[in-house]
Length: 379
Image (cartoon, rainbow, N blue to C red; front, side, top):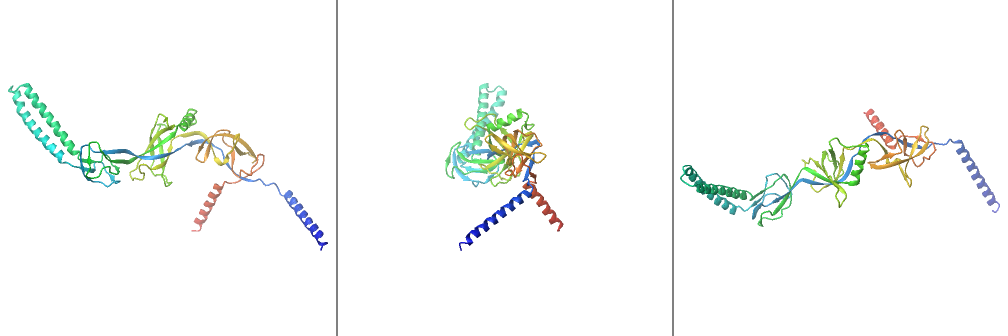
């Protein structure tokens, strides 16, 4: 048994040595394979620069419905939360005392009118004095105004909606005595709909700085288009316009207030709803934007890996300023025409040679095209 142990150890060592030599020989006989990478070709071109903000919807007219006279509420003639039309009757107030006031004012007016009609021809014949004529005229005008006021107060017993929109909860129930100026409810006009948002002051200043440098073009008439994304993640089908950007910064928050207006005839947007708003109109002139996956952030700054005409990798330090979607805006380091590695960056080393391959998205698009062509040919 002791004789077999050295022999077995010697056999295993010889086997491992032969395997190692063969692997070394195979490695020396294989050519160095250049790792595959996907690249992005840098181009300087005009690029729309949308701005995205958190926003909240509000009715274009949020109107308080108030009582204009003191009376008891007899009826509520709408369902709370329903859509009401302009001029629609919302509350009926007690009319008795105001009908009596109209009758009293009517009687006084009739009496003053008869007196005026009697005195006027007599004055023309010098049968009455100027003072009597003036008193009759004043009494007639005063009674006519009092009658008009009494009729107005009677009309105020019918509280109507001043605008079309969605009603709110009632503040007083039927049977309560309300006074002049009591708040009965609200009506929110939701078509058109206002979208209120705030622009950070540094961002606004950055855009103005780029415009002063000639790198950014504002809309010709200063009017921005707007799009919104709803809470379910879907884009709202209509397009709006930005109608207001404040000229001052809010001292407490450091933001600039702004507002956009959207058509809301179908009622898809509700007051108080939170949305994402996109403000379109600014154009970056001859901008260089590169995919974010190209960039490596180091302590010394941002670096990208370029590929020259011989497919050799070389590093490029760059200066980036803004994140626009999935891209970075490059301020310095690139002029256009460079090829930057987007996929396979881990295997690429400065000075090494690489093989250019389509990106994953291009491969998927090519496969989808091939599958579609195959499916069409089989029909």
